[in-house]
Picture 1 (tube, rainbow, N blue to C red):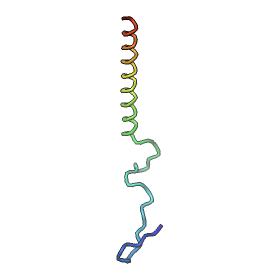
Picture 2 (cartoon, rainbow, N blue to C red):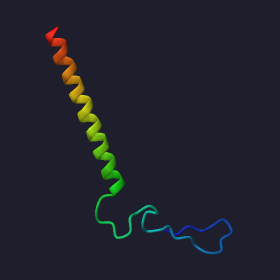
Picture 3 (cartoon, rainbow, N blue to C red):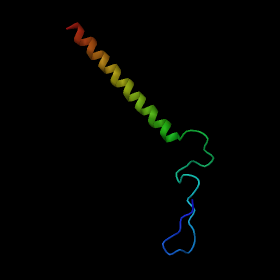
Picture 4 (cartoon, rainbow, N blue to C red):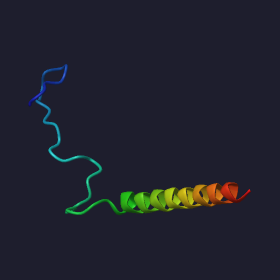
Length: 60
């Protein structure tokens, strides 16, 4: 869609691609992949700690 600036000189065409898109990027952003790995490790560690606490509480 063309938009005219307030002064009416030239139409402004919005960019077709996103400004932060990875050039030639067909795959996922490596930063997001690393973030997901980090969050998964944290969740697994928290789950394991909770299971161990429940096991200790069951013995008492």
